[in-house]
Length: 88
Image (cartoon, rainbow, N blue to C red; front, side, top):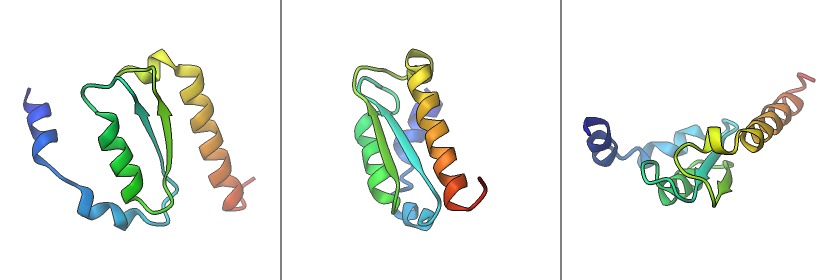
């Protein structure tokens, strides 16, 4: 309960712009009642250049429920960052 209370009390929105230039992917789950999708959408919107990936039929356990898709998204994200930086 303390963690949920802290999440409700803290607003990092004003700081998100500082992440400009940092390759970012934000994943949201449509049925997540803890990390609500509208908060993830706002986070992605506040980070310049961030990419939003939505899993409308998943919940807070999206990393387990949709492991293959999450892993594919992460692999694609890391590969694109490496390619953009000439690491591949």
